[in-house]
Image (cartoon, rainbow, N blue to C red; front, side, top):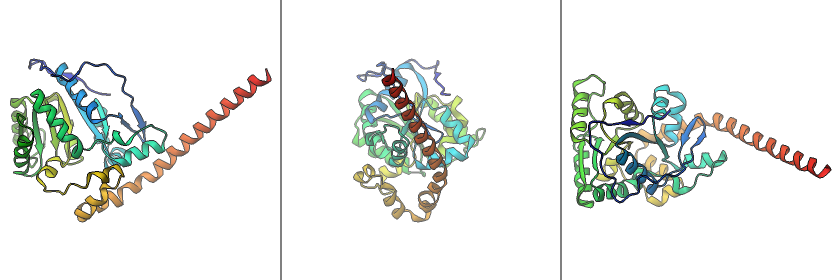
Length: 295
């Protein structure tokens, strides 16, 4: 179930030159329990423009291999994705899994924030969309925003760090929500790491006033160089994770070397079902053809 919530207290913004009202049929692929939409960067920008033009509140989430593992074992994490309007692919591993299970995902359907942030903010600067970034350590988001305003002249961007008491009724959480809602962003980027960022959005969704809510991970840490950005060619071959593991082995070894093993059983089971269905369809098709020949 997705949630589309109008924001009645704010006048509608123009989506600018982007054709936000274009009606297109968007597939939704389901495998290993997850749902993903095969979206490219231009298509994602159009979806954000549509949310702004409609003055609605949409979650635009993403799946990578870590989120697939978390999704299968955490009910609250699954609840977040049930509320997402769209879910794009953030990891070649998900592209490969989808292909293995018979879905026509392409390499260009893999959209990471390392690749998406610049074109997203270019449109935001051009179309006067307001952007709020919540996340990273104190000082990191502010430095990142200064860099991004320089790269994208005219960009309207405010920030708050992600080191606060995220309990729903805490004073710090209330203060963060007040800052966001006073600014009235068209785009809210929440970069507090998975699953903390998803839980925060889920807990506070009804109190957030933003058109597009995006879970952005360590986006600003890459902008300021606090985390090394892997070579962009590595992403196309699905080996970006190796560079990240070498850079942060203590933090990431379990995520990249142990967690994926929990998917071996589910992937094997789904493969068996997929290919047994294909075999049955081929049998039925051949039987029908044989029957027509006899007649």
